[in-house]
Length: 233
Image (cartoon, rainbow, N blue to C red; front, side, top):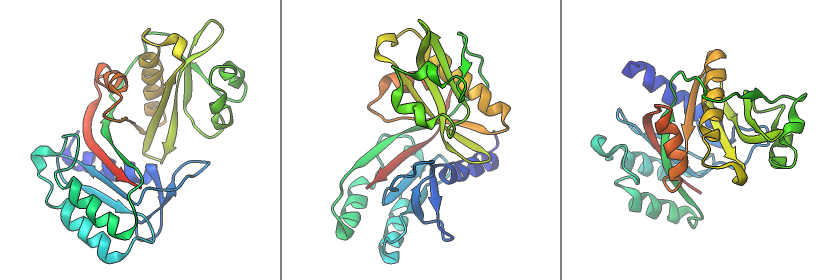
């Protein structure tokens, strides 16, 4: 992947994650049941940091955050926390108390073929989620592609596009507790990535630093680490 193409995809990923105003400020998450956006999202990449602030954040404060982001060392782009971590929080605390901090890696998934059979979940197959993934039932019409690995007659692991743009899809994945450590999540994500690429989009997979099992899924599929997210509410 060329550097120019990668840079464009990373910018497009921000557009897939959030709804923004005409100035690129974050309005809400880019989901059918949109939720509040964080006040501050920084994605560190090998090329440069990509920073977005929520609409309503004072312009001078956002400029200070932007200046801090330009001090991030390129050779530390994939470390767990930004070099300027404490300073970001100090600046944001001047605006409002910091409520939540999240950080984790983001991967681009290569073409993949699942080792297990996966099925497409649409309105005609949504009953396969019932009893195990009831929280996802309302998502079925909105999060496509949506695939599952079936075990004992129902979905055991699922993966769906939870943030979508014309060029980028972002994965949401879950395995039922009774079926973990069987490779089902790996197959579900591989099947989803295959379906996303068939749509002409690039599959992104992100997770938190605390979720080692989720990171292993991306790594076993050959995911390319392209950025590290840090966002603050």
